Length: 69
Image 1 (cartoon, one colour):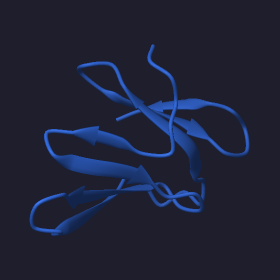
Image 2 (tube, helix red, strand yellow; image 1 turned 45 degrees about the vertical axis):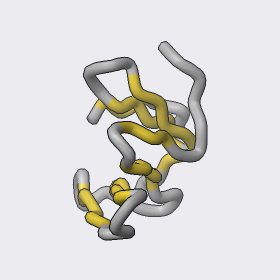
Image 3 (cartoon, rainbow, N blue to C red; image 1 turned 90 degrees about the vertical axis):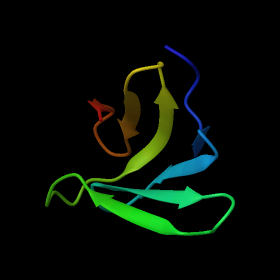
Image 4 (cartoon, helix red, strand yellow; image 1 turned 180 degrees about the vertical axis):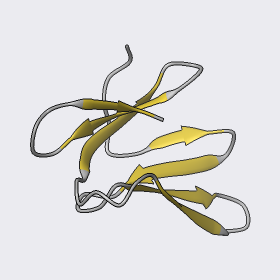
């Protein structure tokens, strides 16, 4: 698995996980349009994100679990 980072760039889009809710921000680099993907209603957040070519992997801030998206 690649190294975890605070954000990940894929296809000219930046993906940033939120640190206090179960959601991810997608920001298009050219147009600056953004989308927020609410993954669940949980109040967990993430400290890092990575991409393996198929899925995004995010590390939970509090319990250390990995979430595949």
